[in-house]
Length: 251
Image (cartoon, rainbow, N blue to C red; front, side, top):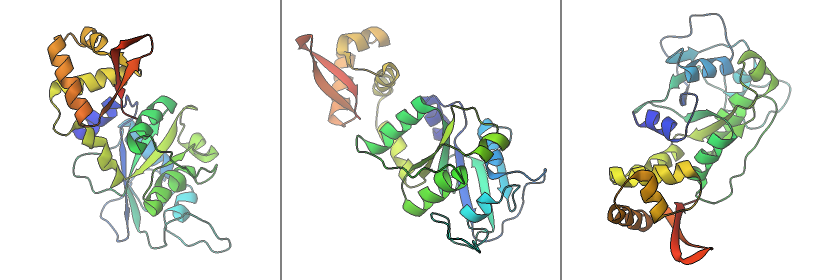
């Protein structure tokens, strides 16, 4: 349930996908026509499949990037160690054993996710135009323990038929815990005010928040103080009126 709520919070158009790399053979595998890794991710993200286990691919890139085979003639950086038996692509849900979480996003959605991940600190990404979804958004986050983006590659866009404005963001499962820290111990009113601030995307006064929420002034003030104390929002002064405090989501 929390992953569905997270997708709603970020305004995602696709379901969040969990990826698990198995070093031991697993029962079950994809029974349909041979597909690419990016096609499997797309099917699960669209909701047409709940889980796909792949042991072989239409495209050779994931075989190399995800550690199914060892490169024979050239050295390829940022790929998983050889020994993978299968990869499990599933709709992300509570309790799912995953190595990396994949988000299919546009620029605005990615901005919201990255703002939550980095808390204002720069993030450095390794981006290529080949082996993009399997290496950039899957292997690299697993290897580094850090998020990474994929602008997708020609094969992914051709086989997966991704919209031209969509790209992928891979987040190591351990790092994904930060997505849920904001909601800990918050009252429904505090969550509602966070939602308003996030939705507006700019600083608001307590009066504006009260107008948008329909909440009593005292309730708004108390909730803002609690959010400030928990470090979830910032307080600044309105440059037009120094007597007015402005509030915004903490970067």
